[in-house]
Image (cartoon, rainbow, N blue to C red; front, side):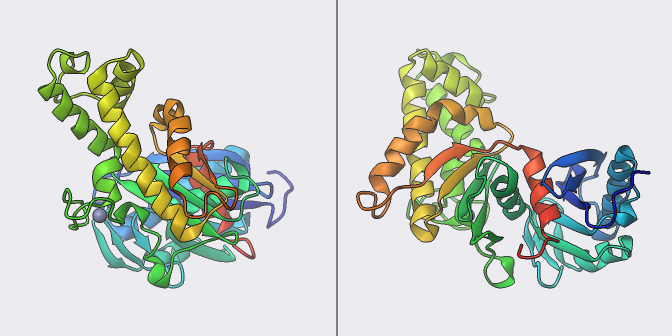
Length: 324
Ligand SMILES: [Zn+2]
């Protein structure tokens, strides 16, 4: 066993309805060991807490340390996680409603000084600000694009969650009044137009309508964001039209967030983060035209996330640090 004492390392973990990933994070916000375990869909909160402890144990042993000697444990959870009480108010992917997940975690880590639970995208935003694309920024907005859009906001260096930690849901701000129905039940949300699933739907519609185009040659049922980008790169007019409209939606959602929080930086992440690379200049230029006070003050830059899943581990681990 290595000689580092309590306080050298913290445990950070994140989970989805497919897997748990746990990391051992050092005092310089580096993930020095990680482990993962499969998680069945609909796994209940007690079993999930037990598996988080198993996964953290694997990560600790990978480094040759005792997990009980880690100073704190932080877990990033998808959904509404009330950091003050440890209650997960709601988690769609886990099908949890009002479960005392934090209390259950505490039972699993009796030696830890603090055990915290917070919303996953908030942890990811904090992680990017401590060690990634938003390094040294204390005001950060992060969007995670996937089947939906989740968002995390860091204000004055801390995760902003509002009352019950139910705020900062920037994917559910309206960009088209009376528009498409969103997963949350409202109409016209940013998520309903700018998630990767929404882009795929927009591409499918265009592929079915413009059959004599490059886009039209793809299977309208399975076309992916990467294929839309590929067609647009080759100059295909249908794909360029889809992408141009999509970038417009994305820019509107970003501008709404910036006008609300005025961060120093906006970070775009998600599993297909590379997809954004070629559109960043266009997104930045469209956003610049629309930010409130753009002519008066420097505007935030829109950048790509750089840490992937490690951002969530680093942010979750940092929940136990003073001031976070
Ligand atoms: Zn919504």
